[in-house]
Structure formats: structure tokens, C-alpha cells
Picture 1 (cartoon, rainbow, N blue to C red):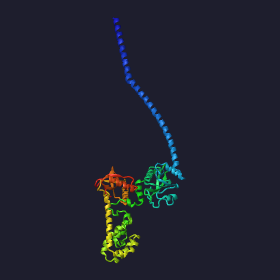
Picture 2: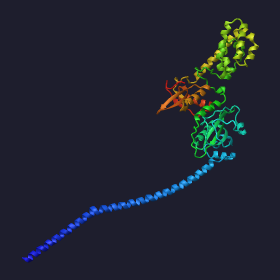
Picture 3: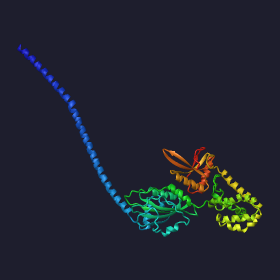
Length: 471
């Protein structure tokens, strides 16, 4: 019995050992799987994050060094700019070299640079200084008939010291506009104190410009108004000489001014040599002809003579009485150039009463011609008869559009202003003429552009009846 019990005890102890070993292995695996492995992963992630932080820190240090280098370079550049801006130009070549460094200035366009004069360092006001001496060569370059057209003035007084430069040049209108656009693009370097634009009687395409530029010191925030190129375009055409008669496009029937060129009417000697007709004219006809006399001094008196002559002569059989009354009124209202002709033949013209009646028919034919001429062109006063029109301007301000329209009307063109609105912003388009076909509109636009040098661009637009505003 004792041996059997011992064997059973040995078997039980072996089973227990195996069970303990199995439990130990299972517990070790579970500990490794759910406790050690996650910690190892966390440790590896921490190492990777640490390496990334070190890399970022190194890049930050490199960037800091680059910023320091750039800051040093910026300080050097700033010092150089200060030295450049504070330079007082003592020679014309210094100023000319500075102007050549800017793209699109007179040194790099077709403009002919006449003079470039450095001026004293002083506070520049908006109005021209009468005490400021002008260069003699600058005054010589201006045409005698030049009229000043100044740009919009800056604030009343510029409260900082500038380096003013006076520049005078002759050139084409387009090159002059490009020059001022470049000045506007470089307004951080300079501003315009004042300028004047004049035309030339010999060549309408050439303009004379004199302007004073102010070089700006570093650190000054410019609040000067920008150069309004559109307003410059309105000023320049006013300086052009009178348009030749052969190039005049007749005005429309609704215009009160005679539509024929002055030269054609002045070549009617038979009508112009009848002073008795003007003597018998009533005071109403004289006063009504005064307004055309200002615009067309030769043709206006001729247009009013035949209209008033026949009824006055037919109603009066006493030439001596009729002769004396206008002689007292007309010298104050008519030109002195016409008065000597009135004294030469006072009695003969009144005695031959039928002659003025026959001559009166000729001006009627002239008046008919003037009204028939606009029918040859496809324009209309309100633009409602055609399908196409020529757009010659587009403006943000109505005043600029109206100025261009008035200039066109002064040259015998009929146009209107159309208002467009897009996204709450209004623009004003200037149209001229009304045509049945696009080819006629194109031909008209080409001829108008050849005649008026300030029309540098145009667009042929389709129109609808009533689709614009008559102006």
C-alpha cells in the first residue's frame, strides 16, 4: 500500500508542474502582448517625434540665419535708397540718368526731350510759384499759342521737402500719355507738382509739355491724387488748331450753327458785296447773328443777310429813311471790318430794289445745301435710324464723358452718352453717328480718327432703337 501511494503522489506533482509552467507561459505572453508591446511602440514613436523636432529646430535655425542676412541686406539697400533720395542734383546729366532708369520715360519714348532742369530744394506748393525762375531754354521751346491745361492739384501745400525737376519735351500725343502713365506707375518715387500742355499750329499731332516732378524722400507716404489720364485727354484737344474746311464733317440738322465750312461761304462775292442788305436788316436779325459770329466769323453774317433783306425792301419805298436807322445801330453790333463797305454804296443798292430779291435766292440754295449734307452721312441726331454706332470713349465719370462729347460737337460731330451699370458701378460710353451697315461705320470711324488725333481708339457697336440716351 505504501508504494502505490508514492507513485500517485509523483504523478500528481508532475501534473502540477506542467500546469504551473503553462500558466507561467500564458501570463508571460499576455504581459508581453498587452503591456510590453504597446510601451515599445510608444517609445519608438517618441524617438521618431524627437528626431522630427530636431530636424525642425535645425531648419528654424537656418531660416533665422537667412532672415538675419536679408535684414542686413535690407538695411544696406535702405541706406543706399536714402542716399539716392536725399541727393541734390547739381547737373543736368544726374537728373537725366535718374529719368533714364525709369521705364517708359521721355528718354525711352519718341518724345523729344527739350530741357531737364534741376531746381532748388524747397517746399513745393500746388500753384506755380511766381518767384521760381524758369529756365530760358524752357521758355523758348513753348509755342506762342500754347494754352495751359493743368492736372488736378495735390493738397494745398506739401509739408515735406522734395527735389523738384522741371522737364520740357515735344512729342506725339500717344507718347505723352504713355509718359504720364509711367509717372503714375512710379508715384512712389515722384509726384507731379504742376504741368502745362500746349499745341502747335504747324503740326496738330505734336504737343508741348512742361512739368515739374518732385523726387520723394524715403519713408514719406504719398497721398497725392493719381494722374487722371482721361482728363489729360480732354485738355489736349482744346489746344489743337482749327480743323481745315476740307476735313470738316457736317453737323446734324438739329444744330443751330451753320454746318458748311467757313471757306466755302466766304467765296460768295456777290452776296458779300451787298452792304445795303445788312443796312436794312432789323435789330432782331443782328442780335440773332451774333452767336454764330463768335464761332464762324465769316459765314455767320452772310447767312443772316438774305433772310432779312427781301421783306424789309418790299415793305419800304423810302430808301433814305431806311438807310439812316441801321447806320446808327449796326456799328455797335457788327464787326468793324464790315462798316467801310456799308458807306461805299448806300444809295445805289437801295435804288435797285429788285437786285437783292434775286440775290436772296442764292443764300436759300446755300441753306438747302447745308441741310442736305447730313443726309449723305448715315448719322442721325439721336442715333435711332441705324444699326451701328462708333464708340469713342468709356469713362467712370459723367463729367469726362460730357467733356469729350462737347469737344466732338465743336468739331461738327453729333454724339450721345450712354450710361451702363454693372455690379453697382456705372460707366459712361460716348457714341458718335448711326449707320445702317458696319462697313459704313468703320469707314466713318477711320476718317474721324485721321481728322481728330486724340481719338486713339474706337469700337464699332451694334445699337437698337431707343437703346441709348440722346445727349
